[in-house]
Length: 343
Image (cartoon, rainbow, N blue to C red):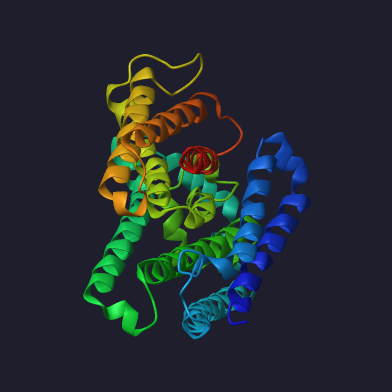
């Protein structure tokens, strides 16, 4: 039962996020945010339900004792994180309410005004916004490589672990830790901005304008990876790289070289659209080949998986409107590849 604290935290986030959405449903519906935010809430629920099965799914020989230790370490980490946030928010609430000047300074409408005045939409700014997404990708590949090295050296077997259980424990603990951190900050930002410490406000300098009154993109991005922890690692890795890398390439190429609009009244260009599609195909193909021991399928099936992922990525890029592509891209491309693998 050591998994319970983590599951409860994420189910709690589902409840809090759902309450926030329902409370503000009229505004959310008018601004076409309701469905997107509802999906985020449901992804939190999914995380809480699936968490007990994440470490051991690919590791049938993992002992209950080893599994308990993994759950325990993760739960302790998250409880400490939540405790630190609770103290921080309470402290800032107290000092803000005791000092009218501080409360006035921490007015969210003023923050939004300053943010909009300083907003710059260029390649340099786009790279800054994509950095956190790309860092997520780096963390996942680093931990998988670390687990592979330890497994080959025989270190993990001494602890009763294997590559999947150890690597996914690190990936999930760090990834979920970031989600917990940003969702606390987002709920405070959108409801009681004065509760946020000044250092947390710096995180929001690089968000997009359309995120000012909703959750930042990093949260649904990470949550949308969750189902694919149960797929072979190359599919999980491809989903992560498509959502971060292919999307970044499409944005940057579109901004720098885009001259032909993809659709009327759209900022997306044919050049960026094409670059994103080609990048998606190469990502799936190369990852499937490089990590072939964990995805033992024929080259024909790898080609088909690459093609399906590319088509789905392009469909999302062309037609997604009110639902974040950080949700649709991983879910559609991931399940598309997974279905082809299973057929």
